[in-house]
Length: 335
Image (tube, rainbow, N blue to C red; front, side):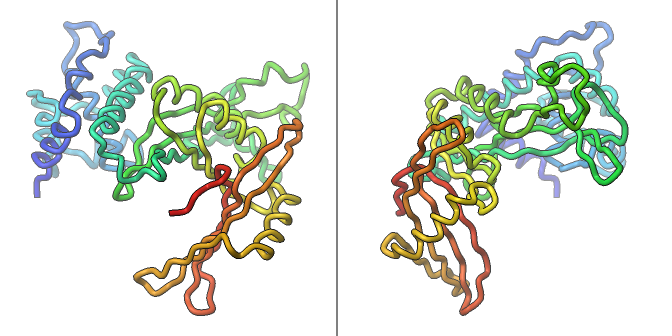
């Protein structure tokens, strides 16, 4: 089945101006040497993600015209008339010349369009958009790649890595849409004392990257009602402060090892107060139990915080299938 026409129709419904936005990208290439239009190359790059190719080089093999209708479909999507497809180095050269900013602008315009159309509204929680923030590794080396590499030791082996913190707004039907990206690297290396070993250099991390990332999201989406979702790394004074500084709510994973004293208090309060609870019987005949208590916390910088400790457990008979805890906004209301 050729899904190209269906995809083109869907994209033109939700993002009718996408090709016009691509046309606004400044093209630094020398015109007499241009074979492939901006639209076509941007769509070629997007297809790497839409088709979940493992690398850019795979486009030379898995998207061969001999086995696919890729050229026909790309021309339809880009409203182009190319007679051949580019090799991966052509795409690499084009993206390297335009840089990442124009692509980020396309992302911002696309997500703004979906928000204005209320396409994502069904996934809101108490009026807020859930924004997942999580780090991901995208490069790893056995030898030092550049001065900004992160390092991690495994026994006698040192790995040199590049990572990224990604923010994605959660949509309906298990969809997510990227709204922000921040690279995690050793940009603070210059602040380390002269002659410091790699072990003593204070590395960049997801928490530091979150401090840089959320203000950028606020610039792009100043009026968006946001609830940050993240793992236990962010459940600390700095994670709470970042949310407060940028007018965001938060739901972070709450783990015993992150705030051990507060975790013990949380467990004790759960046993003392059973009135704040909700039970849901699922279609699979399992029971979902939600319980919550209000917690007070003073961090290492003497900042006082109030938030809701939320405990979740799914039970089938006498067996616990899943159990989680989160730190949520104060006075969280279950509905």
